[in-house]
Amino acid sequence: MGNIAVVSQSGAFGAFAFSLARARELGMSYWVTTGNEADIEFADCVQWLAQDPGTQVILGYMEGCRNVAKLERALQAARAAGKRVVITKVGRTASGSAAAAAHTGADTGDDAAYDALFRRHGVWRAGTVEELFTVGYAASVCPLPASARTGVLTVSGGVGVLIADEACSTGLDLAELPKAAQEALLREVPYAGPRNPVDITGQTLTTPGLLERTLANMLGHGDGQAGYAMLLFFPAAALLGATIARKVVDSLISAHACHPDRPLVVTGLMQPAYRHAFREAGVVVIDDPSAAVRALAALAFFAQASDAGHA
Image (cartoon, rainbow, N blue to C red; front, side):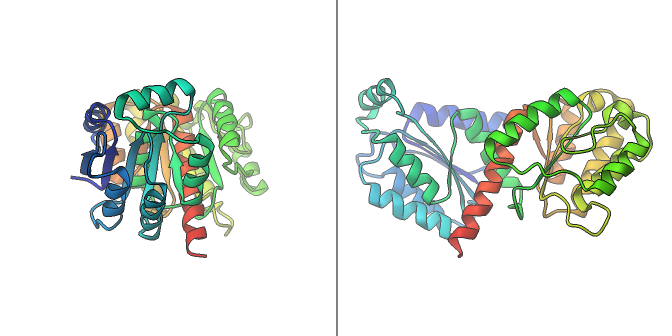
């Protein structure tokens, strides 16, 4: 059991989604397929799940909607109940619309109108199935951040550049680390990248306490200032070898325990044992850095939507 519900207008896609969820070890509260909706519609399921105490995240696969007003009421109810809704809406092109009509008889409608509808009601529109589940996973584990201010910590400058580009394109705020913290880092590692992304290089493997001090500076800045609202860490090879990997894992879990209100995401490949340790501690693990950035962007979007909904 878990707190993620899946609603699909395609039975085969729903079965595929179920298999993906099991492969990712995601617990589900409900799994529903509505087919051609001769009786129960997608919106009916969302409306019901909005009131279900065991469901925190609603993932949807949508081809079309016969009753937009009903769908809007359902999305309003989900937002009012604090649910995080992620939908993959297909039929964006003429070819996709024709395929949907042949599949379930769905009228996919005006894609721009759906975009506006989703934004209005705090729904994150996932462009791919991978994104649907990645965002759903992060939303099911992480608290909502206080802002879009995101700290990126890496031991690879190249991956830092990749993450920075993706973060800017999704609207995350990569504010610089305060000058005092930058200067402190450069005193330890003169060739570090101290701004944000913060690149502590491979020295994290050989300098005792470097990772812990940097995490403390980024999550609390070490000068009384509030730290970043979210943190993304790319450890590169640090979690591939056994010698120092456990120390890295323990340091990150400890930092998360000190700041449980901040989403902490680790991105990159690692051994299953470390992945399991992170998941048990509530630290999200996402293999692909770009996907990890989009997950954080979605959390910031949900937080902003929640604030707007209570304004």
